[in-house]
Image (cartoon, rainbow, N blue to C red; front, side, top):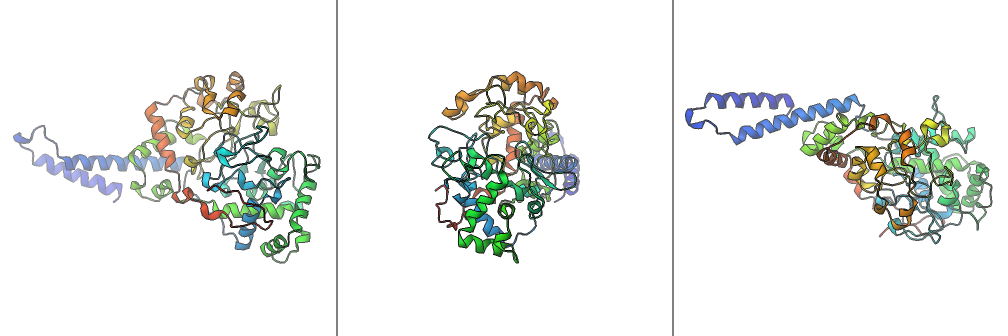
Length: 459
């Protein structure tokens, strides 16, 4: 039933009720009329939310183009195969576990050299990776990837990767834009996958990224099954003429094929189903899109503007080599050199955000409601940040940089104050962005990989 019909029915009901009133009914209410009025009010709220969403460019998320099966199967195998790590002890998916919403449920990831999975993963020296492992959902719709934007399209649509630039022959392989290049970079990181010693990849100087990729292709070429899979994924091409961009492209294609989700309650609401969201979620959507102004940054179908903002997140974890002791992380400034970009990080997309805690570039905030709440009176929240919410090994890593962070805080947060009820409502709205199919991803895990190495998967 449309909003116009509901309003018409309410008007007729009200007229008939007034016409039938007598002295003996004064002060009485008709419960049916109250229900009808509430229905009309909800329909009006739904119409307002749709209008606000349209104004923020938040429309339906388009599905990615179909990915050929052979390419997707190759990408799946590579993503789960530890052969891509220096010491063959970690795969890409070790930190993007399907059963944990394609994350590891850690504030900052625990990389190569560790044992265990998820919150049970332990490194013998207590080492962590620099940042939080971001989820893999709907990355086909993101033109810019990584927390500091190291993988992006330039104004001409060319994929750029500063620090480890691609050759023209490699860029020509990328069928899925930035997503095709994404998988090429964890293998270069010593803390994530390459290791510091004990293998031929670790012996390569950090600056010689092309050599690292070449050695990885040499490894893969020693496995006959991989040679067959690559040549099936790229018909008419010989494995011996391929480069590591072919591997990255396959992983990107697989991610696009299996982690694209666009059937959340929010999507059904946008398609015209007023009942897809609860009244609380509708109120939360109105605040998110309107009074709280969240959609100024969380815009578009993915709920991300693809830009960088300092949202006053405390710095915890090992940092990224910045600051006087190397324990700070200057975010976007690391790429641009612009001091105004210090502590700014990419706006994270919000689809399935309910499944991907902790939050922030360093996972400093461990649950969804607290993440929403930290935007309100953010200076006060940052100064009072409580590190005891973190796992024990990270509690002592909090840097006393609150005042430095506030110097470049996004100006839109300086006066933002949200009432507790509004925080609750926005949190409930964000849960409406979860596609039910994203809650169970067991089917994306392969039975085996060509190297024969064990697959990391939670029970």
